[in-house]
Length: 636
Ligand SMILES: [Zn+2]
Image (cartoon, rainbow, N blue to C red; front, side, top):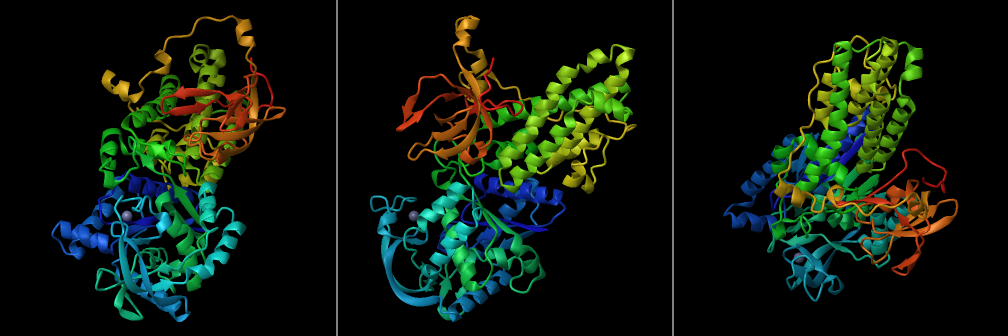
């Protein structure tokens, strides 16, 4: 199966920032994952280089547009290797091939009668390069630039988008995951409840020359969307290129939510009008918030991605971005949160497990992986096999559904299970007696097997760390090792393999007191304990395991989710977790509920109980049972 993934082409009126880095790293993670599935993959990114904003940015620097776009485009191209992002192609909208495809598609749609010429008067924001309707303005001003738009009257070409409204609604309804996560599908359907206007697609050359000339009128250039969006097909050599035939049917786009409408509405209509099949999925993510505002150059709030990468390591940076953001929701970016993830998930959970297991192999077996008879493996092998296979299955499911954060959470659940297994098996006790040597061999072999699997599963997000782990497990990090089919075989590290000495995968970052304070102000663990209670006091709290049956956002309440749970009986619970958990990520999950808490009304909804969560400063962390439990089971 081929797989085609794109980022948006980035507008060159500013330098790359964290938002660009996130989108493109996500694309790279997904690319690597599909390569693990042995699929033929094509990954496209690039730069959007036409338009009056570019002309003005160039003028500010005293440059002609061409040298200016060459320079900024190069900044983007230089960034990707530094982030271990490997696109198959980097497209520029000033590429002659691309410009030719744009003209060709415009001509085709014009000939079919879906582009027409008309006089137009409208409110125009120069910052946005677009006309606004009265309704879209906020107190008469552009919602983005807070400036009053100017009235412009001119004749232009229009794309008859309105003709495709009914078709698009139908397509979205019959393809439920066409736009995902679901909240953005709903958003697009909500737009489509209003009549869809036609789209102005040209600018007279009197106002803009830095663009692609319309094939049917020399006096005009095409404007923004016909130029920009067509990059996704021009890069594949549309209409006759072999790549187009191979990859286009498998196309998936990744965008941030600010360009949902062009990608969710204009683009499918354009494709339909041009007689090109529509893409398969549009995957939409939220914003990274730095302090209060959205990450945006216009408020001067730019975190240079490379600074964090250089300070804490590229893999830790990639892991943080993928693990911290629930794909589709907004997330907070801070150095403190990054350090917290690095210390907890990477240095502690993964790094310690790895160095413990490798060091013990050295201590007890001279660094040589022991031979284990199958019956010993069955008896003392920690029973990790079924969990390993379940982990791979859930990991695949999460990545197919673009829930990247969940895929990592699933791997970390397995890491947690392994850490627990070490503590339960107590290899250092087994090593004391000759009688338990066979058992020790089985335990260690099983742990090494688990590390081998983990090193494969983290590869899309942390390719360098995956390679280092494999090297230290004495494995040849040949390409075939990363294949999911291989990982599913749950193979041991071959007996007799000699392991290099253990290394520290992720050094812990010691935070100075001042930094620690900003990192996590009232450290929960350090907070004073509450007064002692007796067992009867505890017994008054009725704690139950519950399965989430339904989950949805509460309208107008940014923080609240409404959950329907099964705890032997059905109940509704309203929880303040919406900023940290996507509703769809909770369905089917088990949680712990305080079942006899007096019901309370929140936003008019009766909440019959409360969820248990750890009060992390970065946000609540839900407590979930280690294994699936019958709903309604009491905690004791
Ligand atoms: Zn504006």
